[in-house]
Length: 202
View (cartoon, rainbow, N blue to C red):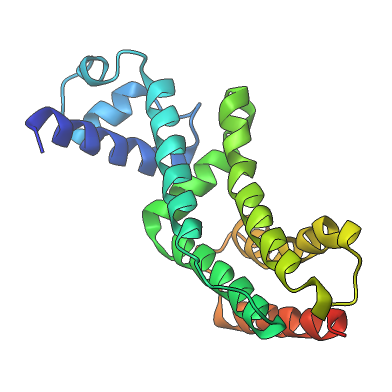
């Protein structure tokens, strides 16, 4: 890695810590410079558009990381048991993202600063959910003869599964402001998914 790239990473890391702690608006470029140990104004050499460019990079890196984690869920679904396993693999992948400090901070910054994100960046927030839904719909479609719903309801079923997963994640991270998803919450979510699978089976 080039020296300039190392310095850029240091600036990104310092800014991410400050944005997570104080918020984007309350953080000054001077604070970022001092945290990194560079002279005032040096930040603009690496990021000509200043704080907003740094925020954009944090948001983008976080989204790429989350999408990559979800894309690694590659179970072939041939039964309801396989579908349940796929759902739990997706949930585990999401929990793993937030167990990483950088992953957690990037997510929280993206959510808290969404009012100043561009339309394209705002789409990124729902992009992971869209990918999960597409994955689930494909899986559900392959075993539709084993479940008690019509083909017209596959999309709604995928939405309900996502809602179960979303609730535990958002409640822990956003409402309770915890940095990790606790074991008790994971166990409760597993039980809810298991019951849901039982309810839709023929």
